[in-house]
Image (cartoon, rainbow, N blue to C red; front, side, top):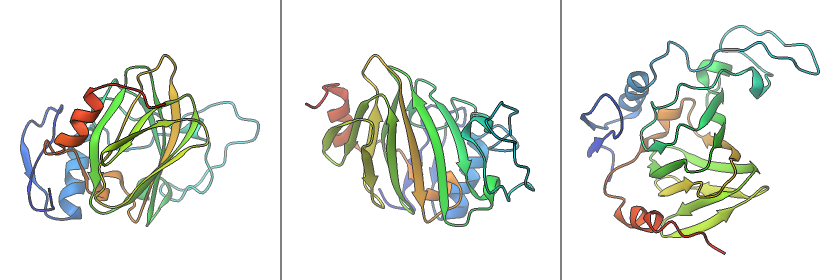
Length: 202
């Protein structure tokens, strides 16, 4: 699949096929998928320090606990409604080349094989464990591990274990999630067949 080819957004109310042409198209899809006016809302939580206030879009230091979790069910290809906080983006911190978030996938949650046409991504495991895949290989993902996916590389994640897995995810080269060229085309047959086996690597 390449930009310009039909792209089906699965598991959403949109239920249609998009033709991805450029970053603007991808951003417009993001706006359709996210049913909120803002991707980050600040929560009042108890911290071991004072809460620092910055103008909207110019936050420079925030604790992830202050970030309102994103509404579940609006990201195509993600199953099990994991908890996700979008921490760094153009909208939250005025970023121009970086997106960063935190996610917790409960047992049974998964992210279908997908790729990013305009960004590299890496994820860093904080706690728990899960299975991650790149291309035609799967790996056990444990605390301290980093998974890297280059531009256009198919990758995925699933938690088939009995404990949550917590990780940070970072896109480089873009400032909003769907500007990454995020796509979950049905043509990822190879990766889909591997993940269906549900076998944990040693």
